Image (cartoon, rainbow over all chains, first blue to last red; front, side):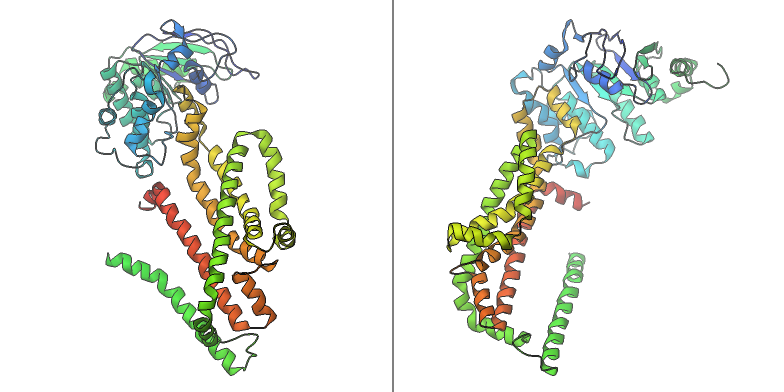
Length: 248
Length: 258
């Protein structure tokens, strides 16, 4: 997969951005607030049309890929439908896609995959924030997309839940081998979860640097004390123009 | 179970006791001050009047009830349709809102005689007046309900290549149900007022028609009886809408259960 140059609108939302994502890769995108991460993600997913450049999935235009239901989205706000139970929420994409849903996963199974077995018949208002995020992820997985695009999916959650969900996401990724691009504003999260970190500059965003994280998956919490991890976080911070202790 | 009963009792007892207290105070006040009965009858007199006259009031009750319910239905349906149109068309929004506000703000008491002139003394004029009164809350609420969707949800639907009809049926319409019910609750209460005002402007039957006569003949106890019946009618109708709401909006109840 390849995302060539992309540019923004009457206000320059994004500058020249170009990067590739290999199949089955877990890539995070990190950048200062308001730099256009969400815009970038929407362009990558075919929700917005860039004023210049294009997005190619496996060589074909992203809109074609989108119609083939190859792209799944998870937003910062789980946006579940409050009048539907968890399982009915997960089934929503299947209803919408109808015939275009080439591969389908059993909604019950995917709920189990995100750790919500037994909660099929609960309403969103009865679920905690973390659980709602899980349902949103399940919903994005139910039609078996090749690519998962996540926009700060754990942004509204507390630290402990974030960590847990991050681990679950990595486990899910290793099970399903999907390509995942997820946007975050948390540097530690970006480095800890991903194989590569795309660092964006402030608006209008351009790629400041792409940092490869050389730690094996599955990653354990103690890796956060490793030299590699600390160095990578330092690289990202430097690319963002943030200082790192006393070194310049 | 016992706890729920006690809680319900705690809610019901105070107003009942207060109400009874008021009634007794009222009765004693009128009797002891020899207050002119034609201005303020005692609760006892009112009850007696009710027991005597309720058979004759039944046809009038039915007439008014019919006016209220039909006007409410027509008004609500028009309101919903306009609401949908306004949500989808900026042009409609700019055209309909000022018109609707104009219609709503014009005092019903003033336009009712005109409508009665046009549509006669029968039930038709009452339905027209009541619909005019009750449609606006639904235009507002319905269009709010259709448009207050989280944009991320619309994005999600677009990412699945959903068509607007699908978005409407699966997302916008269900989302607007609680809003619509809020509008319906307002509409039903103003429909009661509308029907009565309409009858004041000229009618052949109905509780408002009877109220007019009661005023003309200074039959004050009868007037109070009519007021009583109307209040209970309003409460009953409102209660029915609330019950329907609980059926159609179960997820709000689920939240309350937390």
